[in-house]
Image (cartoon, rainbow, N blue to C red; front, side, top):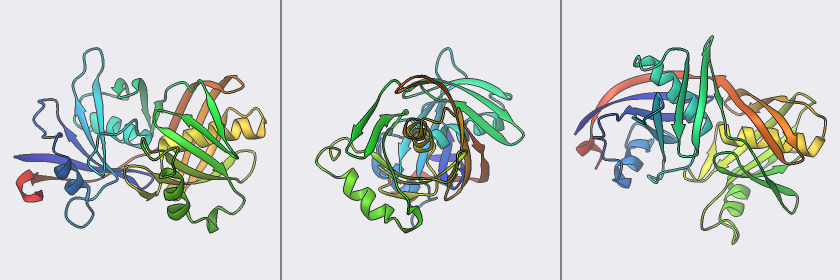
Length: 264
């Protein structure tokens, strides 16, 4: 089967995006998705996103990790697929779309894409770390030496520890730079490596920083390896947050067509 695709990235977190409103993409073939995302044998990406129809919404976002398995919500992916929806004329500068975790709102403004994330209603502790769900499960550990942290090694050890091995977890290492800025590096499950940025991880890190510092800020700049993001929120309780927004730039890299048989 021949299909058209677009390559996008949000702060270096990159994705293959395809219009699947006709439902013809063979997404059940994990090997196909894995090969498509492979940086040596395919297009190369952290994940694949399919834009699909969903009643009551402009579109539905279906996300697959680069290991070929369907994944949970991807924040930077959500920002990219919103840009893609406008590119194909499906939306203007605002939209309501659905993901695996439920409904989202989106705004495109001056090259930046803002998406509203799910409310966070609980944050647990695991030793010195925080554990929470921001559309995807996250483990957040604060450090004073982020540049010297072995993100791949330490992240893999936590992700495959007895507690998290079965379902997996994204592991974020966070350093507080100042009252307005935090630095983050993330080991992502499904990619099984450090990525240049993680949207749901940035949201998790911002929320945990609000808890950790108690400074009452409702917006933080997130410095990822791939560039800056912004997270804003309203704190409604000790570990509950609403009106959570993720903001950052999006870039369309290129588009093309592929024969699925060539990837298998």
